[in-house]
Length: 196
Image 1: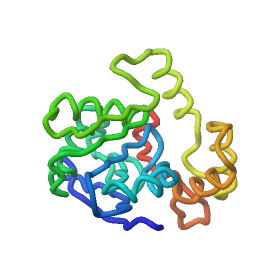
Image 2: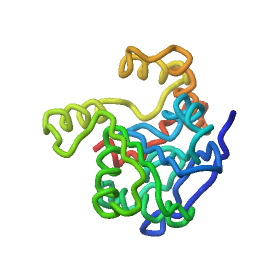
Image 3: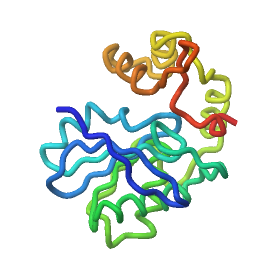
Image 4: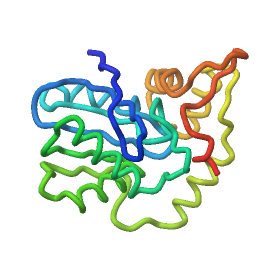
């Protein structure tokens, strides 16, 4: 099963990329963490797509979604993106699953729209953030290069970040998380403003 790649309206005139895995059932929207993109959910999406209308969203500045020229990468702005995207898709009630940053975005959305929630799943996040964890993630991201000589070089970085991930998952994420440059190198699908 392969997803359908599509674009949906976000807030502030931004266009968001989504992977639509199925079109029947209660909508199940997957929100990735900081520095990731929608393909991080590929393995899970294949499983749940038989039961839910499954859609993985690239949050603004990530993956193939538009970057925000104003660098509005706060949780409130991203929750407005989820609001615009789900309304544009006609999702009245939905299940949201958010990992890390995506979990914070999901919490914001759920707090504003409790009547639209059929379920909320949070992974590696909660209502309170430990500032040490936020600082660690920002420092790690700031030290990482955004360009790579090959997908294998990015795969090596991913292996250091996710040491328990399966090799085939890392190889897939290295391909889906990069775009080719004209000089033969690759760049991460991440707005450079997010690494500052």
